[in-house]
Image (cartoon, rainbow, N blue to C red; front, side, top):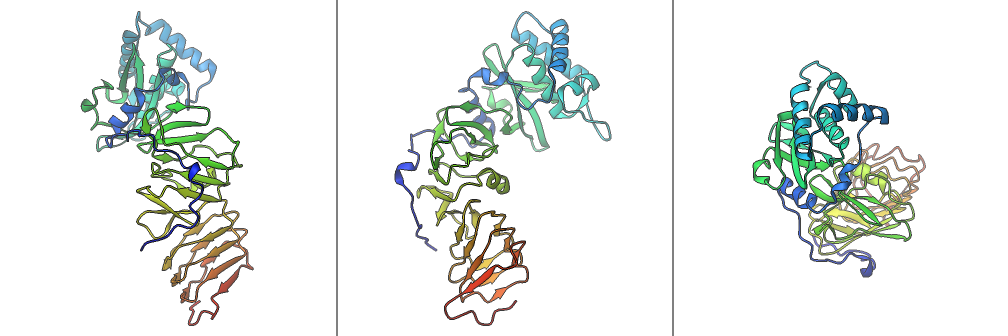
Length: 380
């Protein structure tokens, strides 16, 4: 079915294709492409580490006395070797500590604990390090580090006593498969950017001086393909403009909605290969059900969807009207859920089944407005 978009938006607001390259489809190579372009000092932040200043100072004193060497490389090797020799992997019912100070004192942990303590010990020596999460081959979820030692990035997996120069991707690409980084890799006056779900992602919107939000096309020489903010965008933004580069809003659309709850309308470049819009609602290019309905919308008008399934319209705090397209036939139970300001739902005469609780956790006086000639043979 061919759909003609309604409301193409202002062409001047779409990001310009600047010719930036796409990241490699190989996650290890993709992260390498980004990391070689970041400022190493970005990895001197404690980031997500849970540690007090006093605990950090105690670990620093230990490293200074026992593990510090005459150069960064030897210090790195001494710290790495100490972790391998002194920490035990927590199997079975053994308590697995995660926070770096607990790991330092208790000496039992899982991979995240190894990564957190390695990062902490390196930071005490002003050696940049950040954590990565992903997969250990085909075994399962894993955590490890990227460390910057004597002007060389090293991929460091203390859990398994292995490390590689980052440039030698072929040696680790099938073992250490990154999914995300714990720090932002790039930052400018308007946005911060990280590596999430194997995509170059806009993780924070910093400015708030316009009503429309345009997600940029690239950063660091590579195409941005994800918009999944880690914190709410400023509430003044009402319209979201996406170029042909953005392919995903992340794994959790509920979280994305919470972070973009002021957005009332989305516009997407017609050349986007994965996403499209119809009357401000986002659809997968080859899907009939909506991919994302802006949380700030007051009137939702869907394109044709013969069967409206559970949670098709869910958790919209401001929506007052919902319009289903001619040709819609079936509203499943919980098709509309948790819309506290909903006033009316327009259903065409083609609808023949509205299941019990099709409109759920909404005001009890929601009005169902039917077609001009009414809807006949409706099952309730």
